[in-house]
Length: 315
Image 1 (cartoon, rainbow, N blue to C red):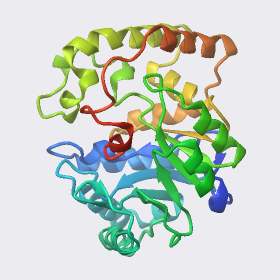
Image 2 (cartoon, rainbow, N blue to C red):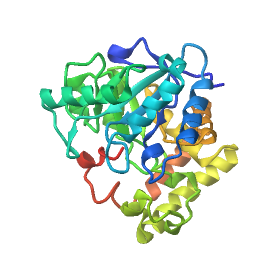
Image 3 (cartoon, rainbow, N blue to C red):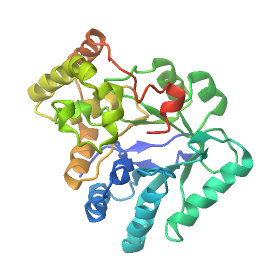
């Protein structure tokens, strides 16, 4: 059972969620999704929470290997099978893309919301829509990959951005979010699995794994970046936790409104990630992680040569 909880900010300030969110993209970002395994993973995260605390689930209108609605279709079947879990989750869904490019028109954003809800079905209502551009139709608005100035203008209830030891910690965005009491949903805190220490070389990835296209997983960059994994693994071993838990705890330590968003499709990983929400790092441990990051600049783009503006399409 996880003891710590987090309050969302802005218009969702009355919502209490787990200290670690659950990214669902990886469940359908594979050629042959294991639905029962995914269902067990979602249920395990929800069941580990105290009464009154919601599991923060993150999905996308295009979270499937074909960029279709496969992830939402899976969620629809989950809620149909376990309708009692609908009220125990806070569901955030990213949409508003036309041909994988942002379309912020009112007409298209409405069409995106309607499509998401249609696929989800009648049991679970969409709690938070994440458009690529700001729209005032929704009770809660989230922004993906914005800068500090845009965040201040929007004063949104939740911001989604990538944070982790392989990403600059974006101090301006974090401090602005803290000032405005906005929850930051920090996705990819494990560097798409790179920081778990379970991937020893690019050859450990299946040929069908989308990460084989990421430049950071290319042989020439992998070896250079692995120094970060080794440093983090040493600190984690000394503390008696996993490298994944250390990374999640480090992201959470960046501010009181930081909600790490690791992805997992196995119940054991979901619980391991969730337990990291109760881990507290000492100042010395945080400093040691910061030293590792400073000494080992990440080599390679976040994705396939994508800019930060384009990269959010994957996360």
